[in-house]
Image (cartoon, rainbow, N blue to C red; front, side, top):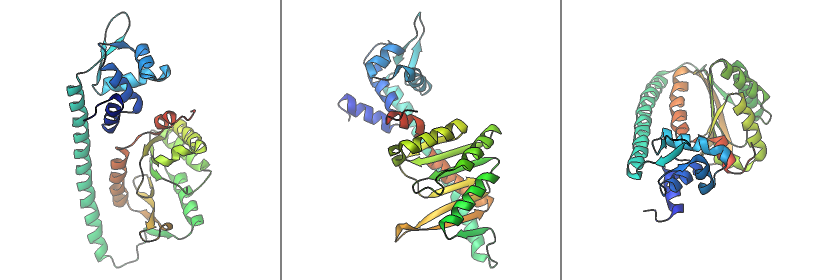
Length: 277
């Protein structure tokens, strides 16, 4: 059981709060109430961030506003607040389980169909060299109109992804969906964080996760481009596959949503890591 403030904040982060949210709540439970400015000072949170932090706590039921001449806030009873966080996690994992069951059924159907398939798989293309992979990735981004869902990690398929930036802006402006899961070690690169900030400004929503299982690009619910590392050689070799198949794309989207649910906004993480964005 957590015994000091640092342990309590760690436990709160494990329950899904950001570092700032955990610090703010841990400070607020020790007081009857506090204004946003007081809370920012006591929790050592930048004043320009405190209102977003408090708003997030209010939305999750951990903090309630108190009306008055000056707006102030009070912590919800921790037993009620923690129970609410646990309920959120239970609901999320129930949803993931349902998605996993649906994916299993879809993949099982594909597998059984594949066992009877005698003709060449015209909708599958193996990309045997980095140049072919990069060209296909660029082409997919050019053709995307509704959505792009991505897992990304080093080494990147293309270094200067101007086409991807243009595609992100085009899809976002049309009301589409562009999301990307980044591995945590990207926080070590200031240059990469600045590029991600450009994609964020163009309309991409990015989250940081501990790791991604593979490189993946899902386009328009129809195309799946992914790289599978050799289970023996590891990252030394990879098989790159492009599949045009809505059922497979939909199945892989369940995996994307499951990992996306575990992540947190990458720019928040970057700011907390000290990046100036």
